[in-house]
Image 1: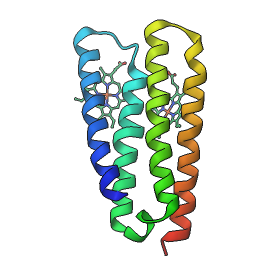
Image 2 (image 1 turned 120 degrees about the vertical axis):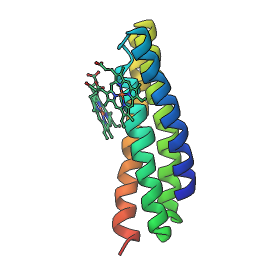
Image 3 (image 1 turned 180 degrees about the vertical axis):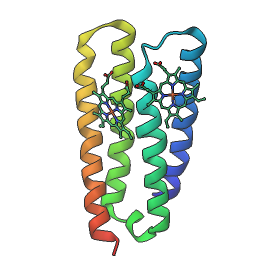
Length: 121
Ligand code: HEM
Ligand code: HEM
């Protein structure tokens, strides 16, 4: 899971800085929260997961790590996609997507923490 997390973190980094650059150029900061969380949950958190699972490969091979990987990579695009659409359209109906995506991400992080305590000694 280490290598997968590292590669995907790079993709999020690129998307997040492109959004930041666009926001700066067009002077529209409405999407700051999307930019911040793509950077922080996409780039920074996933790069850390990748480094941790690479330093401790035994932790990266568990079912908990695999489930964590999929929950994070399902929840984050749902959460940030819904937030992006909500800001774009001002339609409150997207809030439910933000909440569901966030809960999936948080549940994945819970599994990550359990995995840290169980697999790393
Ligand atoms: C070339 C790279 C980047 C560009 C062009 C960029 C651009 C921006 C812009 C235009 C804003 C809005 C500022 C405002 O609302 O006053 C912003 C906010 C923010 N950026 Fe970036 N950014 C970049 C990289 C990063 C990275 C690498 C991170 C984190 C690892 C990051 C985290 C944040 C955060 C947390 C905020 C919100 C700050 C706040 O709430 O005041 N940015 N960025
Ligand atoms: C599922 C996980 C997370 C949820 C549900 C969440 C939720 C939120 C919410 C509701 C806000 C306020 C947004 C606004 O006022 O527009 C916020 C802001 C912020 N969060 Fe998070 N967050 C999460 C994870 C993180 C992580 C992991 C980091 C850092 C590593 C982080 C850093 C920030 C920062 C810097 C801001 C202020 C920047 C902004 O204006 O958006 N968040 N977050």
